[in-house]
Image (cartoon, rainbow, N blue to C red; front, side):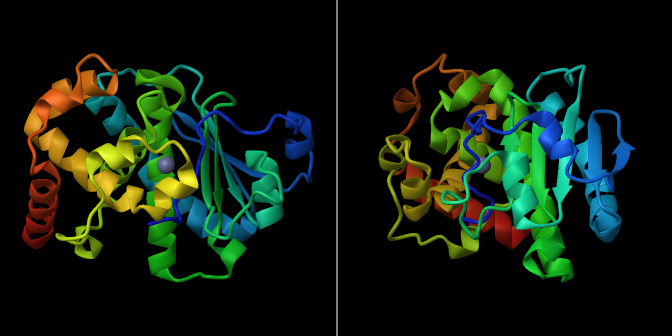
Length: 252
Ligand SMILES: [Zn+2]
């Protein structure tokens, strides 16, 4: 599951001035929810509407589960119509951009960006749902970044948590024989290498199982780095986690 992106929390390149982005044209429509200032174009109205319908309740739920109050200033959320606009919004360099990058969270600028369905020319219901989950993934990063800023908790824990809570778990495509060990994922700091190891798929599964074993409160203390994970894990953790999530999926 690569496409939800290497979102590199808080590391967006700083060469873009705010007003350059806002001033691109005056066609932005703005809608306010309790915690989001959503900007979109008329052409993306349906998608923006579907997103707005989900994002606020999700954000509040994630805050509650993380024992946090919503932050006061809220966040800007840009529904970008083209890849070019997405690059401006995220600050990604053109050379860095890859086709599967469609969502981004920037905790420092308090800005979320999503490439609208028309940006990829796919207006299907499935793709729209896929993109909404990408945005929920980014919202999860925004919240959990407050618990452990700047991915210090490790890529696997940060990505695994976002995948898990955004409803992107995909145990159907996980192998119960050929899987990365948690220790291997945990040592990975390069986002692309992490993705290549199946980090999103298996990270999500391992986090889901960990939440089950520990409960949310203890899971959060692991996330904060307050307790050492190794002591909590037995040898067959990975295969148990995969079996658990496959079973969850069967039960629906
Ligand atoms: Zn992510």
